[in-house]
Length: 279
Image (cartoon, rainbow, N blue to C red; front, side):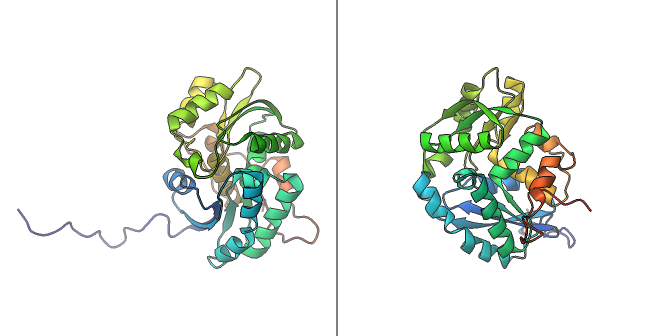
């Protein structure tokens, strides 16, 4: 038996993620799910680099305190020279409504100097791409957060026909097993719903999304799925990712609503977008 160790890789066997686009992520400090899910699902040629902002509890006060750290996180990511940034916290981006979300995206884009995707805005664009107006909402959240999410969706003319929550907060969310996520979505679904949305970037939903679509016979969206989909659009990348829901198999151009959302307000940085600009 040879005493030699394993043979080294031949020169030219390059890391498929390091010669492409760099994406910065602003994520809650407790989140243990989004980075492994993106590394698992995203196509080659994209690397992800996270800056964390402190979240202790997923309550209105806890989320507002967390959002105070967004500017510092954006400044850290700016040193990365990212091609895009994702603010990947569903509740942090919908909590204070439409106008506040627009201000968050604007502020991050000005600091980071690149297009910005926020999870809640990505959800609205994804629903538009699938032509969905009635959703069942499945969340790990407390009732106060569920109410805020319902208000946000209804403000975007999305009818929330059912809500189910687990009543959890903070680090407890990442401990929810995929089997529990599956049951939660099934319990939230109803005949009136055109789709089910599993909310929270720290919820292990991507593992069950295809099985849920087969069971429920309708689209199932997750926070990390819609965020990745929106980032791929901003980067001008085709998705055609199979095994993680029909949204990631779409390869359509930006919807008119997404194009409108991509236009920066007067005086804002032209790189503030939630969808790729047409050349």
